[in-house]
Length: 250
Image (cartoon, rainbow, N blue to C red; front, side, top):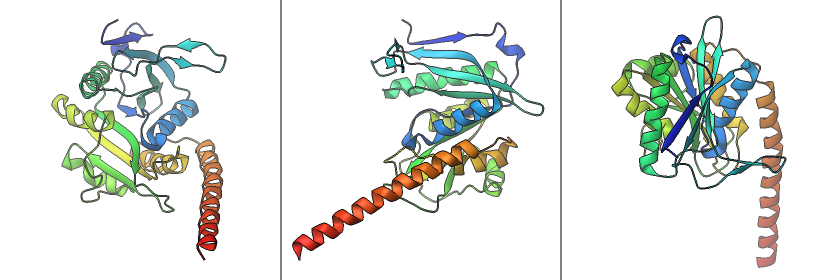
């Protein structure tokens, strides 16, 4: 098996030019992955490539019928009236630092093959506690992009995220500069404890303003509402536990 294998399902990818790529690989709170999968479903995007790699964790994926398959990341393509989009999502990011760099290079190769000029990377910004008002933090690989990102509702916060952006969401921006591909990263605040569709809905709102993509957010919002009920139950359980401990101490 090669280090990275890319299988295309269309004969001449170069003929299907795309304006942008949207990356939503697994990460904190699965924020970016939820947004990408929601857009793929709502737009009816077509799978055009699969990516397998020795840099993925050494395991197989078991589907709902009990059948095992190798993990893979996927490229989907949507051809719209005013905007053609590539989506990058899938099962895993790399399990090694070297793999992150090599796989990001492969993703950028694909972006160039389709003529992509701008990449949006999506993810979660873990804050370590439950939050009510979610900010969408941003990073860009060119100062000229900041104004439009702020107008769309994202925030550039000094020294946030601390330590930078790990994985494909960050490296696609950094390595993209060498290929003259614009990069914008949108990170929804999330506790980091749970899958967070509420944070995803906030990121989708900003992304929609930046790209002009119009999709029905209902399913994502419904998942967010369901998670909110679950979170409230957790808060109530924590409060009850705290009250019981205080009663015992008293």
